[in-house]
Length: 256
Image (tube, rainbow, N blue to C red; front, top):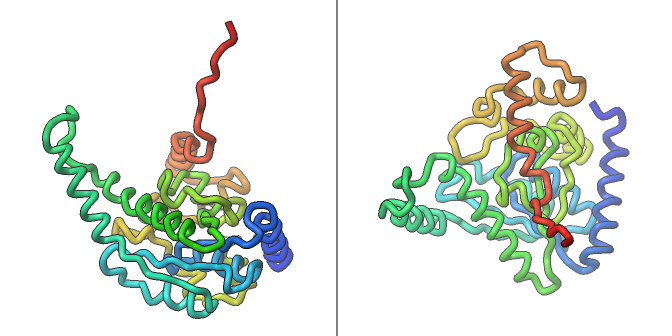
């Protein structure tokens, strides 16, 4: 647990101001609003750091989003400009085009998108949407990443989807620490402690990954995990997904 979450909150706010002073003195921050703790905390931190007029919230349902009211609640609570872009038509169109191409048999071994490719398509369309809106703003925009340290550790994100962004605020904060920051910011508890879900698979995050965030946070902090099977799973996920956190490898020509 953070011993002084208010101090950390203030340091984050100062860091955001420093980032924008160097990378976009008049630019706005653009953040996707899912209605969960991470995007809510990021949006609130950005609002405190930059002022509500320089934070743009983007709601991106894929068809009908059952908890869209939570997304609307946070942007209204913060009083930030916001837009809603329903990605359903783009998602359906892209899915149909890809499946049609794969059905021709031009790629041996596959005739349609896998379930994972379907699930990851939506976050990538959402990130494209955020960058399109950022570039449409008069003074430009910088896209905020909303992943936390716990998710990053096991690679629970979509590469070039929600794992992307121009700057990241929560990447050094574990899930329980993000909740503490949300409490300091005065955000509604039902948002900061809302059961996390990707909104795509129909499962909670914890059901999908097979262990709780409390177990994961404890392991990251202390190296302790009583369940050897879960420890092995966390280690495996961490190892296999490190590529999501590293810069793109580049060939270096050897001098001759």
